[in-house]
Length: 90
Image 1 (tube, helix red, strand yellow):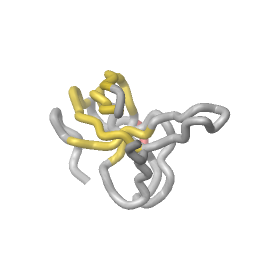
Image 2 (tube, helix red, strand yellow):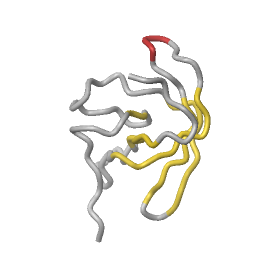
Image 3 (cartoon, one colour):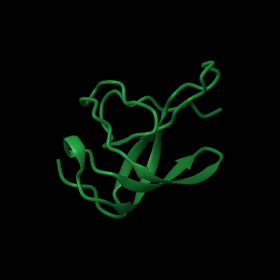
């Protein structure tokens, strides 16, 4: 897979809440800065995460180590693909 570049569209996996009121979901995100691949080739990036209620900026987000189609841990980024769970629009 190609290294992330500024302006790439990726998914950010939200953490959700500990009690499960809000589940972990994939959010659209734009890469605003990209680092060099680190441990296990997981590349850190800075993102502008697009939420239904606005945008948030997060830094030093590591690439998910989950295989495509598997669950991605909260607080990581990954390329869009199968297994991404979004959120329904009201």
